Length: 415
Image (tube, rainbow, N blue to C red; front, side):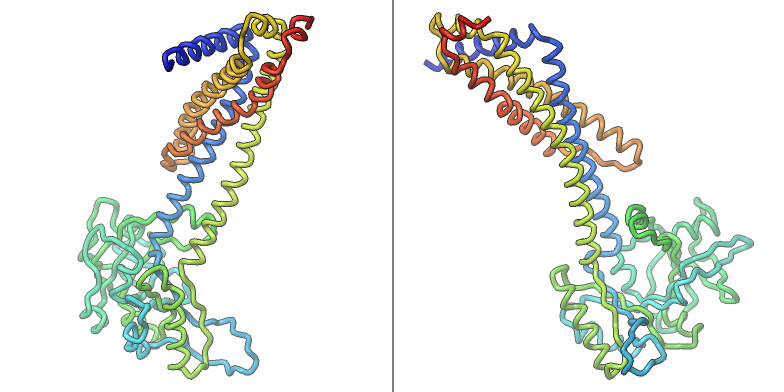
């Protein structure tokens, strides 16, 4: 019985393919409609998934559990006396993170109005983002070393004149192929010995979205105690911390700000930031871009489906007498229905496979032109072909149903 059904199905399939060959131009145009629609879906999936991967990689360069606390310099409370200082000092560090259960580690960050400072070495010059930091800074920021080492407790305690530099500073002052470890950089009259070179970080997409001119590879890090000595203050401009997990970043921020407010008798207001806002903003942006792109792709696919419905409806009209003859000779209603559905399925499958192949090549082309290795979303490819089959079957069902419902007498009279 199964062999008989398989034989009937095979015969109907061959007949469907034969019918499509008789109208090659219409068949090709219908296939092209599905192909373009599936290719569009593939491109949207590839770009959205690829960009999501890159954005998360860049967000991870900050550390997903990272948070920042600093004084709110725009506090406009008319009843609060204007206080000097950053509202955070070295004495506050003694209570962290032992007082804050959600905080894993913390580092002070000291800077001078976030302006770049000039650094010199043997006639070479560059501007750098100079920051005074603690030992935990490198770990919190997920930094790696190309060369050298991190700060030690002795460097912080004795305000040693040592510096960790980014790759762009290394390239500008010493050259790409020269190890600067042990060499001297001048910051004004201060001689700083290089102890480490940070690995390159990529934040191209985030910098373009935020239009931030802060270059992560143009950093120069010194002990925060040394920077404070030069500024003549024990102020800490920003507390950068790492939460125990992403889930408790909100608790960690509350614990740090509450501690600072209590210690400074509520004389300052603080700004508390975490990566949660950045992550949610990035996800929202990607969701909107993907939705718009997918909507455009689905419209293309809809047009392809309408093309299949059109060719199948035309085919039913042209082959009305043929349908009548087949029914008069004993063809079942299901045979007629099956033939026209298979014709629609063949168009959609061929269009889907071609669209998938074209979408893969388009993805590689976009990767090449953009410079980003977006890869191929195989899940999107599979879903695209599946969708093309569904669209083809739905588009072909009504014409197939109409053909199967024709009465033999009416079909034979049709001119």
